[in-house]
Length: 232
Image (cartoon, rainbow, N blue to C red; front, side):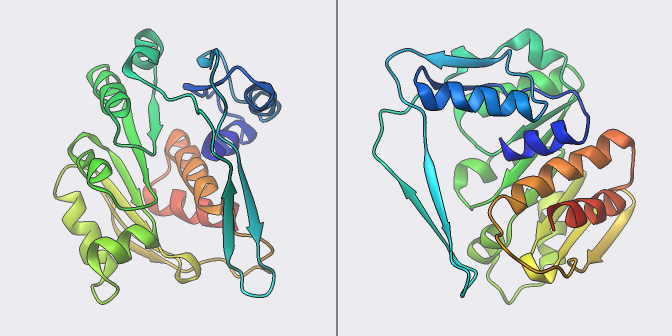
């Protein structure tokens, strides 16, 4: 959602294909998407269901975060909620899940000539199983540490993932910047030094801004540098 808001704010045509509850929070999300330039034509309201809601507490002293959520009967997306015609006209599909509906959406887009981008924020087998279907795979430092351990060179991990299919792999490393491999070569980029107020959403914004670079036709390294600046 935050990645799409970033793309919308950068002036691109983008849409959110998702489900929310037919409740005040679901309708508030629809209005917020529209305010950020995101098309909500494919946002479905599920009657009798609630919308996921999370409150994030950012700790000024430690820089840490706590996520608070209340138990809700949340609307869940299924393969039946996909709009196949819209997917066939998609240039880039951005996913953060390895669920059945995400895999099916990726298959539709790729068959029609589009590309798949995945935000691998946390490691799980379902997301990793998506790698052969993916063009742009961007794991976070949390994924990297759990999957490979901190002792291994993240660039080596990028190469290993790229060997499974993606043409571009970038591992984001927080204050250590990011490393990546792409058709144009390998790169290591430092982060931009800014006064940090709150890191919530920074990773999501990185993904949206990186796709902005792809849509502009930039090489991956330039797109990643822009994404780092934009998320900072």
